[in-house]
Image (tube, rainbow, N blue to C red; front, side):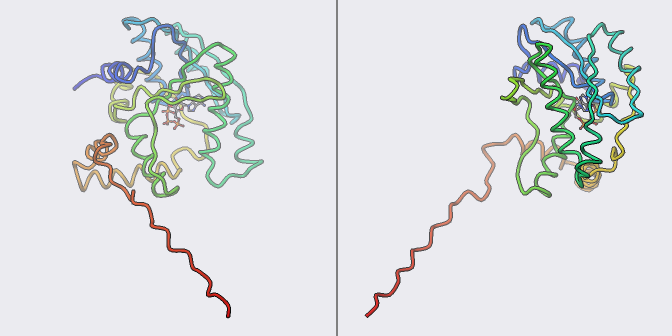
Length: 251
Ligand SMILES: Nc1ncnc2c1ncn2[C@@H]1O[C@H](COP(=O)(O)OP(=O)(O)OP(=O)(O)O)[C@@H](O)[C@H]1O
């Protein structure tokens, strides 16, 4: 089996996610995906054919019980500069706005803070820990709840802040991330978010797992379909406008 480092290196190359001289920030939540991403990008930096700078940024959402000392010592061990930005996002999302679906607003606000911090620190690439299973759940979330066919991208651009968002794990499975975390003894810290593991995303993830169990090739086929632009036939026909009604001439 190809290692997660190998998959990540190929994705970075295939989609030109990082280039010579880039200044990369990993959005570090403390969870398994971004901790593994930081660790592997730090390793990749040592043999990459191009030079790039690497840092980590955590947005402290303002939950009282968020202990970041473990993430801090992990960064120190890797020799990576680490910034923690204190915010009151939790208060805005859960108290002031009392959001029914807090995740989207929370992620948007967090990304804004990350991009602004990157501007202050002269960083141009934001690396996030999303993997292929996140892309699958996002696709189904968008279809089932928002009526759109849309998923995560390998590279996208935030024009307001001139920051590129990259997802170097998008060709890897969640299982590959978990196995790397265990094998490499990468530390992982529990999210302080009260809705963690109780979200629509979690429900869709479980729903997809039951489909994969019943139809063993379905996961691979959905991923293939997502890449198969030439075989994407949706309702493309345009409705023919109905002829304008002409009013009867009055006698
Ligand atoms: N508080 C945060 N500060 C900085 N970056 C974050 C933070 N929370 C999430 N991110 C980034 O956004 C990505 C997606 O966040 P999400 O909340 O969906 O977590 P996740 O898929 O469980 O990943 P992880 O295992 O890294 O927590 C993370 O992998 C990470 O790169």
